[in-house]
Length: 304
Image (cartoon, rainbow, N blue to C red; front, side, top):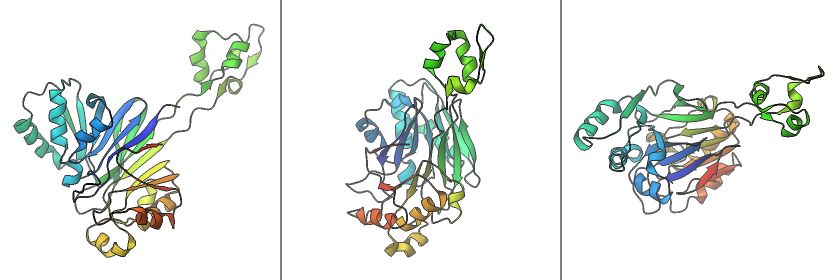
């Protein structure tokens, strides 16, 4: 099974602290690397993660609050200094388009690569990116400004060849792709070997959903139902539920309720308020509702 993992670059909220960086993550899936959000300091964290900058093919911005996007233009500039030539695709709320164009014109003249902007309608759920092995869907969220999450989903792969059966029946190499695509094998004496004896089931499709800043949405579970790993902001504990409501954020208990209703396999919490020196109380509150939960921390890696 090919790698599908999430690396945390930053998991703090808007107010800077010495403990956490602003929001940013790397998603590695089938030899591709995507970035989600790009707060200040993201470049330093990419260095710490020992990732070559030019491996990042696309950046997905959830919304235009600074702790999620202030690092974007700096990263674009750095990619230029590093000699990037392949296009960089930026997916973000459509409101960023004009501002990004002006920033590029002012700060990044002479780039030798294209920055391809893709405006995302944050009010609807839909596929915003697709290639031969993965697609990414937007997830409408409820924040103070236009905001969406993103769901990364593998496309199904072909079944695995059973090498023992292939060797037993002396099936030539040129025919093996036919078997992967469902063909039976007929032996020289006319015996038909059914495909299910020659193959093993394909790897299960995996999925990861990133739900950035949002107030509690009782209907959100419908958009992320059954994902393997769900990241959901948990800015506060329930003792600050009124504050969460006022600023369109979620509590740990509310995030856990979304995970429970969606039937996800694992919940990952982040976007912690600077008021918490110890996030264990956030973890414990969530576990009262949904047991398989973890806290995000910088440089943590989670397999999907």
